[in-house]
Image 1: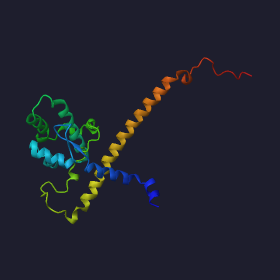
Image 2: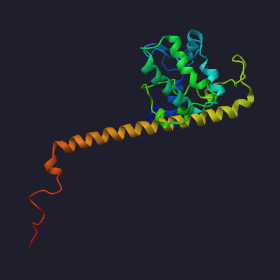
Image 3: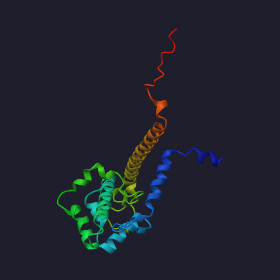
Image 4: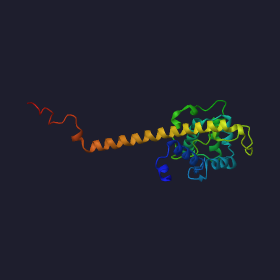
Length: 207
């Protein structure tokens, strides 16, 4: 019956479901982390309308892939956390835009430190990848998708799978750290039984 299908659901399907959920997940505002939008797209549209920063165009001009997107979002999140209290909205946006509008690509787009999520469950992380936009860099947002877009859709799936693999690796590394911490706590509770050089010795069988 259908119950069996639910018990053994292939991991790929779970990942695809997770990616679909991320596309419509609540998303923290660019400048105010205590304000939430209904989705990454709503957050990006609000940023353009209220702050005058077209993040979508910026990501297209720099041809962001999924890793550029994750690094850029984490960098933005960290900058906002560090400078929110001391800068006005306009000055903060100016600070955030500057590296992306410089002559060369920002150095932090090569820095793997920014692959670690700065905010927990940040659904904006994959949203700046050019693969996540249906229209091309010069495209009209209202234009219908062309039949030839199936190849682009395929590469979008690959990008999303790469992102899921990355997040899965991060999750597994965090879990292993937690397990190691648990083990060390348990070891610490009973040091006598774990001690390799116990005083009783192992030379009982002398006969």
